[in-house]
Image (cartoon, rainbow, N blue to C red):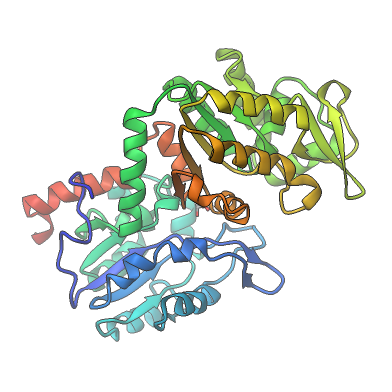
Length: 416
Ligand code: 3PG
């Protein structure tokens, strides 16, 4: 699709050893280790099928250190095997002898998945430019065994880590099929989004969302931001609304540096008055039952689990006028039936919009699929944070790196 960077069609991959960074980070039941949704894996199948004559090494992450679903990738290899109809081997090592032996033993057509790359502190703790990341032990140990780097992990493309960009200075690097499709579509939206443009930001990754909201407003890439989920609670706190101890404790437990995130949200609302919309009512959980509470009657001793009905009506009015709508994250705890209404109403409104609609994120896509609305959404992105970062005008480290790699490739730099 692109001429800005190389794609898999530009390089002969037959008999080559290729390292493919994929994003198969999936919802996992921490008790039994079962993968609950394989949308992200299915999204890579075109890329993997196109590598039937290459020796393929897959690198991926699952969750983050400290989270309950931070697991090894054995179950992912089994699920990929079923989806692909070809064996995907797994080795519980990233660059130690076990991994190297397994890579050297690959035959054309073989696929090998290495261990969760975030088990290694260099991947988790070190962020930086690609030259710095190319110096990590991980890249230095693996790159001599690999001919081509393919990045297909669009969903992680807002992360500047070793596995995402560290191979670029040492190996010819191309975009995988999913990466190319995502970057191509989103690039078109950023370069010509019709106004008014509206973003719905929900879910639990509130630190990312506040950063993205700032970007969107500073770059004037959207007109209005509607908030739901934990993101809404952060903005309510920023406005000085006491949301109640139970909802506050949830934020304290789940968002590191929450005080700073709230301060940032406050500064943003002061700088751009009226542009970030917060709920005028919420739904709280009273022994599993939904109870609507108007904002003026907060705090509630019960946890907030959805936006309220009046909020839904006012958000839908904003969406009806929009020519571009992008959404990331649910409006509440949609897995519980009593609190799924806000999320459902937001996505139904998007599906009915005549504007261009983009939905990002594994969890968000799962809701859209559950509601059978995917055909009415213009672009279902595999990346939540990634798509919304891109659409907010943030530079994506991997896109920059791939563009650079094409220049280096054409200049003969990789032959040195
Ligand atoms: C995601 O799920 O958004 C990507 O896999 C990136 O994960 P992260 O937010 O833990 O970096």
